[in-house]
Image (tube, rainbow, N blue to C red; front, side):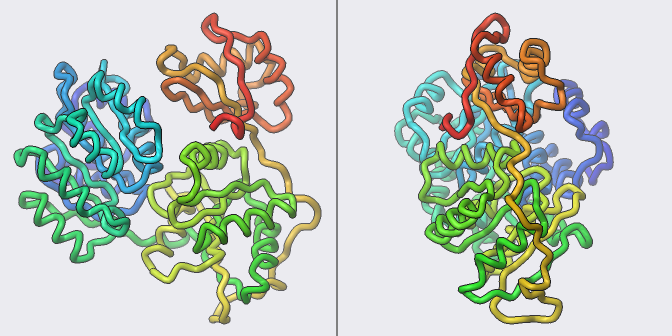
Length: 450
């Protein structure tokens, strides 16, 4: 099968095809057009594509097409380098599978309580998505049985190697039946990745799409600032751009904390994301940024890969990356899906076209607050709650307009809702007596939920 131009030309099941149209999948991305036909033929694929290229849907549709929901055995395994990527991959596969009855997906990630994962695995799973250490642990404990796996996915394989997971990945893969389909995706193809492919794949088809930033989508500028001028330069950039949301990259965890503290003292709405944080705090930061209830996320490179932040207008390299690939991945958080974006890098030496802080035009006064406020509600998918149920209740009972309600994320046991900044009192008043599907569910500010 060659590449395709519309999804309805693919040999997908009616349930998958019907769901795709409802999810707004009209035209395939380049990686989908090139890889998905091969995946559906059962071929092993070695794919090069950056985060945000649509690769999750490519391998997600492939593994779902091969899945037999009537057999409650683990038939697909997706290995990711970090928890955040695993959670996003799991969310996307669940969206793709929502028209297939009784598909069970479990995430197995380190840094999260083990007991709920143990319970989930005892109940059985068709699909497992997770990080190498926790997956290997469940295999050793014989809680994850791999004898029925038909599809194995190694996502962001270069990052798996960079983070030192090679031995765990080998341990896992060597226990999976050799007659499986193996899909390996990586943003880069160094020799180590090609060696991994030779070990784990059978005559793979190489699929390479353009990994560069789309021309004209991201405007990149450099600002000259020595070590003592960097905080002032950062403030001037943010005050000039006044973005609804921005990612600021620092080289170290301590740098993240210091930059966030300085910005907070100026009145900016800011959160941090780095590897030393508890998982609940990392989840909190990402939800708040995605919901527009915090404006600035100061992060180390843990956020440079695997984070799909929708419509992010600004990236700032507070500490420039030494590796061009890391710079590319950082900058690639903005200007996604055809949208425009800006990326500023603070550099010590002037190069052609670079700006000085004085060349910027900052706005004065206090920075504006976030556009939204996030609330947690007890109750989720297991309570048969849907986003439409919540929106309807908030409009009918809380007296909100539909445009006052932003993103609604329904998890298994809880829901996070974003509402327009300024209507919090209406929400809190409604929470004291409001009901959804006959149940009283009281919200609280999202910063208190994790």
